[in-house]
Length: 412
Ligand SMILES: Cc1ncc(COP(=O)(O)O)c(C=O)c1O
Image (tube, rainbow, N blue to C red):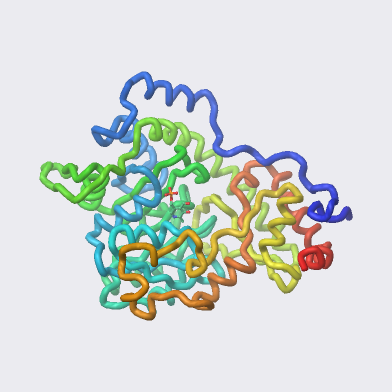
């Protein structure tokens, strides 16, 4: 076989994978209609496009109450605040996630307590959650990472026994289901991002599914400068302007029409990917939990064994890129994350932080292993390119495996 593209050989794939986001005349028309209406912003809240998006999103995901807002970071912060979580409270988050999962409770005044992940799923480990609970713990924020879901049965059981709020960070999980129930509708809140890379996008945006009307009323008030949104119009809160604008909502309304078809395409190709990848030595698929009845594919994550490949995941990703495959090595573990800077906040970090809340090397071994050695994240567009899109990934990985000694020599 030809030598690796990274070492000057011919790439496996020469054609680009499909573009994201997808758009056509419908998006242009939808935005034009809003522009011509003169009603561009989010006040009065919710505007007609925003209200329509909430309706459509609940029809897709399940749940009865939702509040659309600016992005999938404020959705997490607002969930904490709507649940009354704030100063001095502790919120348990996984060590393998985007910084927003831990930064958002801090914005609400709470302390994130970081715990390790389950190596089989790369989602928060329920045993680690249970071990981290104190009398200050108020909430758990599981993250449904990539194409996986956290073990919602175990987490809801822990939450019920300890009277905790569960905020499902479903930024990656549009369309996903656990026992046929939509991600984000199982806990007290489900937080979704509509940021440009997400599989349902309006450029920027977020939506928060709330378990009860009361929580939704509070969330709506918090994002609308504190105005009351309860039926009696009496519930004023300490709020700010986190509203979704009408232009964004118009784009989301078109995107959600395309979503079911895209989701089906990704699921079919991902099933084919599961079959094909599992045959490559040194490749480990994450566990497919049978209770996870519908998957979403923001990113398809699998692991390589660095001992077998002779290099760590970042080098394999470089080699994949050179072969024409869009892959990256994912998030760093929380305790090594340049974007996560709790010591720069005004919270009592680190001096007044209890010792157990401080970070030190090796603290989250499973997250560290995934994030610094083995995880490979494939982009969603790999799964919208038909069987050839999958075949090219598999051919590229096989080629890298075959030339692993040359790759290791190149790296050193
Ligand atoms: C797991 C996770 N949580 C939260 C967010 C925050 O979403 P947003 O970028 O819309 O603020 C993201 C975005 O990348 C994410 O991946």
